[in-house]
Image (cartoon, rainbow, N blue to C red):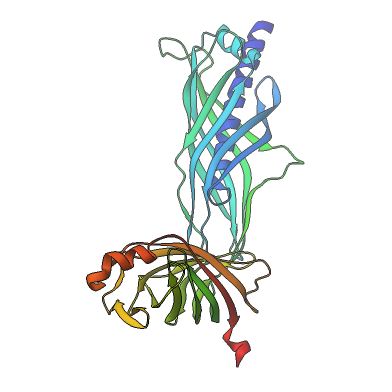
Length: 377
């Protein structure tokens, strides 16, 4: 009889560990920051026949995506629940003829989204069939399908770990049941732990328009010329996604240069946006992804036109990542700088190849100053 009790006790310990894995699986399933890996360790207490309450430690790993604004969905991926079963349980399960163990579980968490009523969620889980060694530890894995949850309300949103239950079955090598049969246990989270797996503020998306006057300069490295730049920079930002649409709209610039260091020349420069202009807001300013065509409507040597025209422009758009500098503030403006590469020119007439050699290449720069137009009125 004492031996029989010991075997059952050991088996219960192994089952309880698996049960905890399933419970934590659900917990992991329900929470974490957007595209953020989560690794959480918690302890649960589970009652078992003959051996009473048992304390189990389980590790949960998962990746979670949270929506950027109300109306989006909370999703889970990469969930893995690992439970290490101790040597004592392995030996006990072996004594009753068990060669493997498998089963199911039901775990629960509570979702609170803004001022909405708390929503309890139960998730069915599967404990994968796991071979039991005659002695030593072994690790079980639990998985489950987690539905996406729509978060309709703004405000603080939390996922809180709850209790769980499991039903596991040890089996012999031939797949038949042992004398113990299936085992069921209901487990509770031990006190003194933080039950919140995920907590974040879900804000309503707001849009804000910004409009700046632009002054500064651009340098064409190959040409060895620097041209004054004026114009505007307008965009509309999305506070929830920290993105914006819009960008620079520059006036025609006029560059003066000297070929070979002494032959005077001029070039008109027209920067035309090519497609949608986008960017990201940051804690201190923003980064704009500017995409544009550069046109040269007129190029002169010694005051005489030698090329250019309405079709003279870069053969493909150029791009520049323009970043605000230190001390920039959305309300008061500041500096905006970036570099860009110019593709070869096309459509510039008989001197297209030569003119292209004067401007194409990398290392070109923008050095701009932005001032809110409202401050200039």
